[in-house]
Length: 214
Image 1: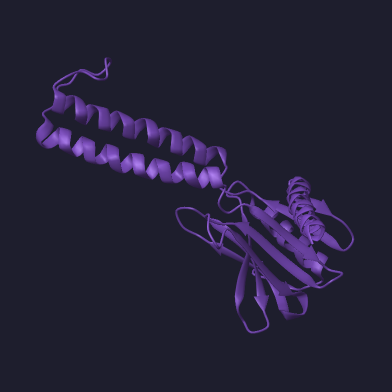
Image 2: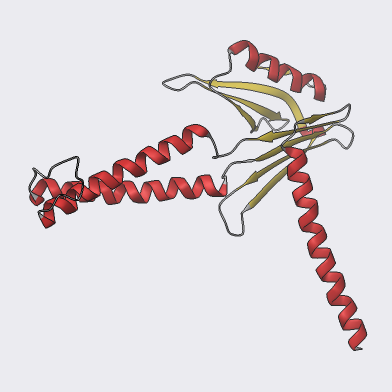
């Protein structure tokens, strides 16, 4: 009896570490985009972008400066040597503290998103099995791992959607047979129109589907 219990515990332990090893190997492979005759595996960059890190760092520095300036006006002391205290606590210092605390909370939120790498994952196009998989990392909890699968037979076409405005965004979508659009890939703002069209055309050619929106 005790021997069976030990064997079960040993099996569960080995199974647990094998799953961890498989995940590490999978995500190492995913970082290298793979394209074969039947499978196209492409990684998706999440919140760990240089631009996000720079914005979070600037926000942290600015919020800290605002908060220290407000505290300096309250204590009537120069906590920041390079910037002498020349404001009153009411109302300027109080407003400075409010902006500083708000900025710190927003900065912590951004750093958490960067640390958890929200939005990262991979897209998998399996032409042999006829399955399209979309995997993304979400916030910690039950929905930390978000995975959506669609059958290739339910997809009618590849649709290129471009939202023009202050920030032009291009999204490659799957148009289902029920006329529903499923976002698949968001193209970087640095890509040219020709590169975006070539990307959409290559996906359509790989899946042998028509393309719309070009």
